Image (cartoon, rainbow, N blue to C red; front, side, top):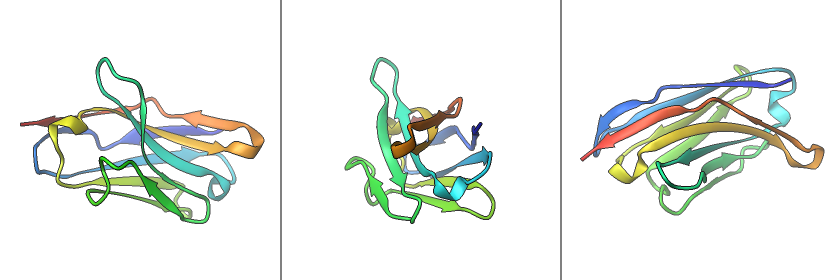
Amino acid sequence: QVQLVESGGGLVQAGGSLRLSCAVSGSMFSRYAMAWYRQAPGKQRELVARISSSGVVDYADSVKGRFTISRDNAKNMVYLQMDSLKPEDTGVYYCNAYRALLGYDYWGQGTQVTVSS
């Protein structure tokens, strides 16, 4: 069983920065691809960034150049550095661990990010 716990959300002014962290319990963390999703009020959950087990990263167009996803396999952690935040980045951010070929898909409880204008 894999459990994910996000932290680091909060209230920040536009142009500011936040760093989200996701602590992952369970074995074989390094074999999981990891992702961050977000959900704004009244909208569907959307992919923000993902990082494969080998470290290949991918970003939504809306956050390219502003957000950076990283992972520390020794600590079972994944991070999302968010810079130049905009009000439209507001939402609940969720950490996701998955191994598509095995059908493993785990989610954290989410952390609120609010960007004021």
